[in-house]
Amino acid sequence: MALKLEPGTRLVVATHNPGKARELAEILDGRFELVAAGALGLPEPEETEATFTGNALLKARAAADASGLVALADDSGLSVKALDGAPGIYSARWAGPGKDFAIAIAEVEQRLEERGAKDRSAWFTCALAVAWPFGPAVVVEGRVDGSLQFPRRGTLGFGYDPIFVPQGSAQTFGEMAPKAKDALSHRTRAFEKLKAALL
Ligand code: IMP
Image 1 (tube, rainbow, N blue to C red):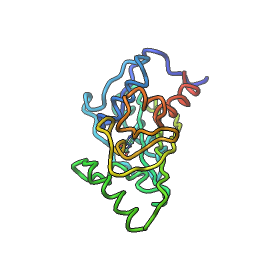
Image 2 (cartoon, rainbow, N blue to C red; image 1 turned 180 degrees about the vertical axis):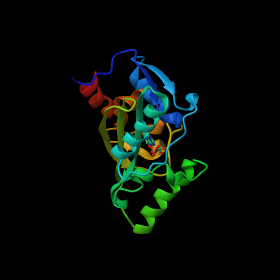
Image 3 (cartoon, rainbow, N blue to C red; image 1 turned 180 degrees about the horizontal axis):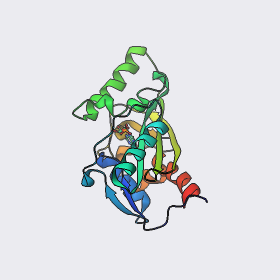
Image 4 (cartoon, helix red, strand yellow; image 1 turned 45 degrees about the horizontal axis):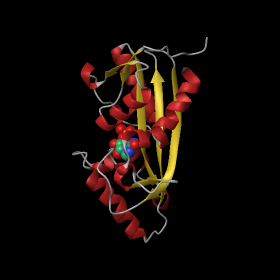
């Protein structure tokens, strides 16, 4: 039997990141009844896998089995070509325990300077995983390409948004209204694939 995610399904969103939770809610656009992992008191599992898809599956599986609900998890990050794809799966960890993205952004800029790198190409990746409690799971990945620009611009979005300019745009994600970012984002592209697989 093909896996289907019925409209109105109660879905636990396995993230403790408010920026991601907000964007996922926007993108899902009322299709499901969303429950936050934090509201259920679910712990944040350690991200021990080496890939976005591996970590998204790990988070969805943990939330589904602990809650008894179908779970949706997002693992995402920024990859910089001149830094050999870093910070990648370590994107959140570069912000330190205080989750301060001014620190993470300064780290990216400093490493580019240390390497004398001129190439500012970068991309965001988003893996979205859906897991059924003690059952099957599906994972997909979306990507948006662009370039980095310093100093940071814009106060919207979250994380690395103020330094990322998507291809074809003059604005950073940090300067874009939510709908404009959603129209281009790695998260939306991943969700389009999830729709094709499950809806
Ligand atoms: P994780 O998936 O919990 O490991 O965290 C992903 C991290 O990647 C976030 O904390 C952000 O720093 C970064 N990130 C992922 N998606 C975005 C985005 O859409 N904009 C800006 N930063 C993002």
